[in-house]
Length: 492
Ligand SMILES: NC(=O)C1=CN([C@@H]2O[C@H](COP(=O)(O)OP(=O)(O)OC[C@H]3O[C@@H](n4cnc5c(N)ncnc54)[C@H](OP(=O)(O)O)[C@@H]3O)[C@@H](O)[C@H]2O)C=CC1
Ligand SMILES: O=C1O[C@H](COP(=O)(O)O)[C@@H](O)[C@H](O)[C@H]1O
Image (cartoon, rainbow, N blue to C red):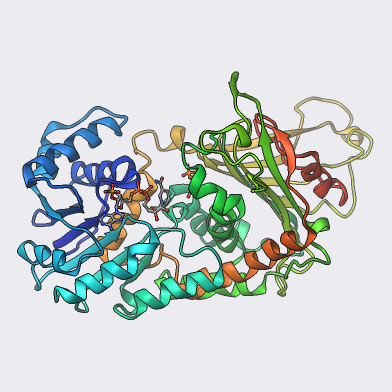
């Protein structure tokens, strides 16, 4: 990998360092960056949690978690370098005097990156505590984990709390899908290839499908998930971010605000869904007992800690429409759910059919060209085209075959390791680049649209439709497209 990222050393403060996200994702990602020699040699890692621990014990905790959650063989030198950076501050986030401990390790001359890997309910306490300790200045960057709120109003409360202490240029809101290699590739694919750039609108595209299927269930997070549901957990953030990258106008540059301005316009142009059309445009589902990859799994209401009367959705399918010039009349169908047959995220662009079929003798229905972007796993790009079957038969009855031009990342970029999304995002925040982080107005525009749908669901009082774990969701999601003479792309 050739990397030319030059950046200053920083004090990287990890609030909530003993939590699930920090242990499973953030510490292993920091290790990978260390291994790739992308962390400045003088950068410090300052873990913050409420347990009593020495810096050595913290380094040992880092060691254990990196080993537990790293798939490839550990590079001992790199891990030793990461451990040598470790400092630890014991703190209860609600106790202001505990923050003084930070000053022992942070240097006001350096950038401080503060990762809030905590519930949003303590974001405000942490900001207040940092102010109390006198460590806030213009060089501090704060990273906020999702969810930013439960709806538009609560997201405004959180954003206002943080904005009392930091300006927008210091705030990095994480949506980890924006760190995924293939999601970023959407920008390259669209704007570095005239083949796509010039055919990317209602004249050429019939419709777009975005599917993010998960084979996992609730993974011990019933309490959180039941409050959220798949709409807040996945659609409000990840799916809408993918949609904006597909639908946005070309940004003037790759600068953060240039990209984010264009994404915002898309979110604002989403046509409202309300109680008058929510039944026609959306489907909610909840999984029941079934089999996923040959293994029997419990239904949502049978999961540990479940409230057996819950009406929370674990599946959403919907038809989104973008009211602007480029996308007039082009539906974007979104689908995401837990306990689907496999973990597969993909975007499929269906181009319009040819206006006249020259080949009807051999091919009465010419299928449309499709561009499939496989986000995960088996990352890649695939274009379905019609090709002449080799042979000497009469030109008038030329035989055609549907063929795939397939670019598989793992085959094409054999020597490149595909980095985890958090590695990319941690590096970007250390470099001070906000392009892959979500701006406040984007979060709020996404909530405004999603709130409308959730309100409409409440008004209809209809429970989510059951679907068997291991299936592709309720049959109503098939009908959502069938009504318009379309079908979901069949994922494997
Ligand atoms: N886990 C994941 O995969 C994902 C998580 N997120 C988000 O990331 C954030 C963190 O999630 P996750 O790691 O799962 O949550 P956890 O509950 O596992 O971790 C939160 C950490 O914050 C600490 N904490 C909470 N309150 C205080 C306090 N008053 N003083 C000191 N420490 C405190 C907890 O300490 P203690 O251990 O002592 O209780 C805990 O270690 C959340 O906002 C979550 O929504 C987002 C996407 C995925
Ligand atoms: O943010 C979240 O994302 C995961 C899915 O992420 P992926 O990178 O594994 O595709 C989801 O399972 C989780 O519920 C949600 O909070």
